[in-house]
Image (cartoon, rainbow, N blue to C red; front, side, top):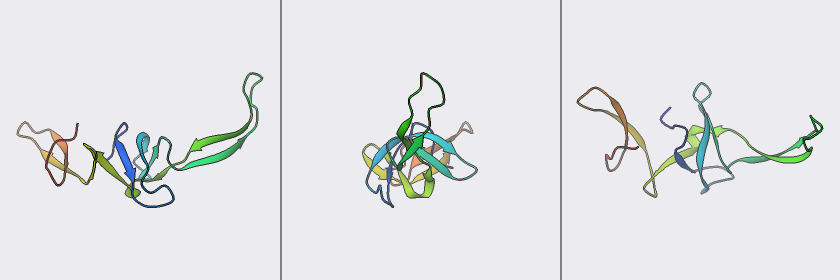
Length: 101
């Protein structure tokens, strides 16, 4: 998976198309990610403890990693890999070849 926690991504398809957010969780085995503020669902939650409130809460749901693109310097880019001379593998932005930090 070419995306990591903390990356800023933009949704390219689906009901939240055009929204941007930061990746909160990554699930590589299922190729899914959770983005803050994107693909939000309402969940009816029962009170579990005395000091906890119940009711309808908003919850970020996973979406497939193929439905988002990485945002690098304000533009959507594809991600590639390049091996440096010292043997380390780094992610690069495809059109420009710049290293993604």
